[in-house]
Image 1 (spheres, rainbow, N blue to C red):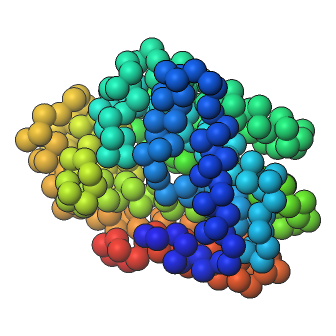
Image 2: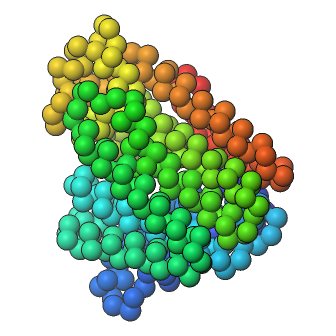
Length: 325
């Protein structure tokens, strides 16, 4: 997925080029070692979806982004990066964005402290943008924390429910995407009805984004994913296709007998094939399509047709290459 090709909004691509420089500058402290840690994943690249949502929500692609519009995107991306630093420590990940993860390169302690620093810089930038943005970022961090706790609390539990799953992904993914759209609306001083519509769209976009990832985790190849297929199964994070599969009358009992502990490669592949053999993928796609309909309804109140068309196309692109679409 190329977000800019789907959005087709003038100015947004050039705005994000400016944001790249601002993003790196925002975490450079002047200490060579610390700077190498805090910029490690920034220089590794990334889709920059959160800044893209923020800038597009602010400008609709009809004008260049202001400095404050760009800072709003930077604040969200720094919070996202901080969460990656911490997640990789918890997951004992070795690779992120095709480079060594921060914890693999610098150690767990440095990764945790550097993640805290990125979070502090995000909060500092938000404070510069005013009380509304500062409050938004505080709520975003609280949502991220709740989502992470929910995920950890149900790790390796074959009794994990749909409610548990949606609580976790709304906190970890939906909150950041929702806040990205909202921060753009705030820096642009959009009317409240548009601000709320963009916030809801961002939430739905985030939910679809995570549902897509969870479908791909059990259907894509290792090469397509850049990691072993079924990695969530191996790590005890039982996503929605797996939750549905565990309730399957013909396969559920067998899947129960495999899951519940760390899996080796053979067990992981066996579990993945069991999940794919059920209707779990189809039912997860149905959930994603429900969120797609909600996203379209949220966008329908926005006055700018180009933004509505661009965001609609971007959201639909998340599902187009998935099975059962």
